[in-house]
Image (cartoon, rainbow, N blue to C red):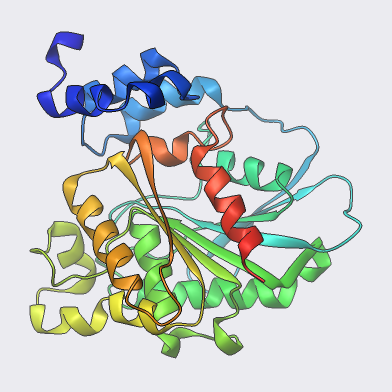
Length: 313
């Protein structure tokens, strides 16, 4: 199988031998991700990472499942808190899953994803909130941003009784989830809490400027087929104008469009008077492995998240 690794993948691993030697990712796992390539393949990636994740019942963690935050069937969230009450309120980490706008869930029975993000959050000092949202094509733009607003409002109103600090809410999304996070931050008309209610936002492998490349089927399902609306529905300019601090990341083995969008936002942010936003390119990982690896020995992404949270006053 290693003979089938593309020239691109081989170049990636050969370009950083020191990094490969120091990486917390086992060499065999790194090769398997390279062999998969720049694809979005949850089942095959899950085969690699599920054995590394915890299984229920989880020790030391209290989990509230399927708490309603709104009237729709998919207006559901899970809350993860430590069994032992903390001495002081904890910051809150909300995780928003991907799925190309038309699929995905916060959790599938029997799968460790995305409980893994919540388990890491809880042991890292957060109250964790894992939320899902309405899907296209039944619920097109701006349903995702509207649902982010409802999630933040629910947390602002209810998290203090669960040991969370409503003044320290961080909203994190990956892929389509990152797009919804970016849309919420950049379009203040969807804010139901003063100032957006966020201490910071974390966007992992998102799309921020719909006009930069042709829309795919997923974007057409959510944003519609009228390209004249894409500029106003994009988040790039609103992100640059927003006072909410953000961290943007992508993965080395992301499909090219996600890397291009990461670079676009990174470079544009450096033109702000406040300076460059925090950004991080995650070595060796793919579009799916970047989050499936959370709560394993590979802490490169989560280390960046913690540094970002610490930097936000």
